[in-house]
Image (cartoon, rainbow, N blue to C red; front, side, top):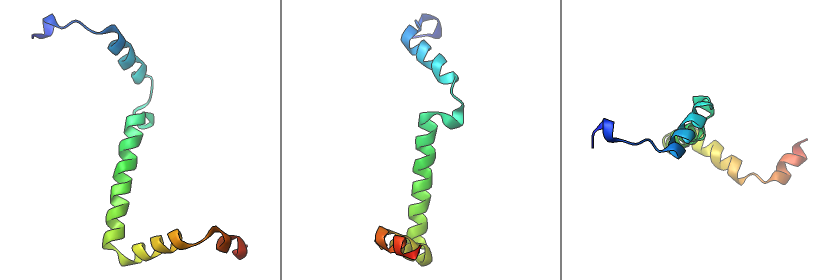
Amino acid sequence: MSFEQCVPDPVMLARLMADRDTPMDEHECMIEVVDAVRHERFMQEIESDPRVREEWESFLFTSRDDEADDF
């Protein structure tokens, strides 16, 4: 099918036009990708750096009651 034979879908065009009103860094898909990349990097850092892993485990195993006693 050539470009001249394509019939634009009005619903899809409306959606694309609406998406253009959202800045790229605020677009839902972009936020999901950035979050996924940050998570992957964090997991790699936990696996490769024992100090980071120790701090992460300490954070996970600290009960919220322990933090309340510190104040």
